[in-house]
Structures are given as structure tokens and as C-alpha cells.
Length: 109
Image 1 (cartoon, rainbow, N blue to C red):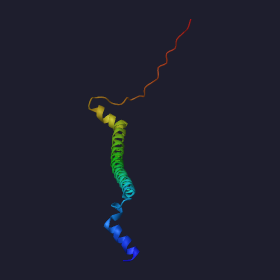
Image 2 (image 1 turned 180 degrees about the horizontal axis):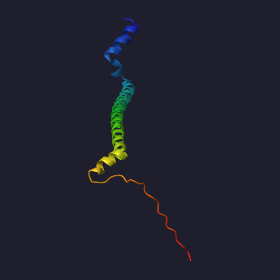
Image 3 (image 1 turned 30 degrees about the vertical axis):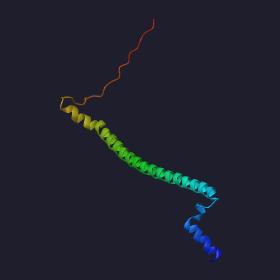
Image 4 (image 1 turned 120 degrees about the horizontal axis):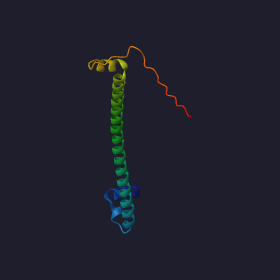
């Protein structure tokens, strides 16, 4: 067997993990596995945050639409014509002549 074939065969068989100097290989392998686990965890965490952000944005749009609807209803309720209609049933009507301002003067003696 050629040297290249023998090295590939040893690699596939996993002899680099069972040799005398395999302790160094195991340490590196465990370190790489730990790094991969950290990477996978951070990737899943980032995906979860993206999903949460999308849900919060959807809720924000719904609340904004509800706010606009509510403020529109409030504006309609504040209109003079709607107030006149509501108080007409109670017997209140607009004044025929406008109100006048009363001034009070004090004499300092």
C-alpha cells in the first residue's frame, strides 16, 4: 500500500484516536465539539429571538391600528353635532344668543 492510501485508511479507521499520542487529539476533538455546541446553542437562541421580534412587531401593528380606531371614535364623539343629538333627548337645545363675558372690577380704596 502506498503511504497516502495507508494514511487515508488509518484516518477512516480512527487510529489517530487510539495511538499513543491520541491524548492531544482527544483534547482538540473535545474542544471542537464544545465549540460546535456553543455555536448551535447561539444559533437556536438567535432564531428564537427573531421569532419573538416578529411576534412583537405583529402585536405592535395590531395595537397601533386599535389606537387609531379608538381615537377616530373619540373624535366623532366630540363633534358638536353628535353632542347636540345626545342632549336633544334630555330637552337641552343650543342657546339662541351667544354667551356674554362678565367682567368684575374691584375698587381699591
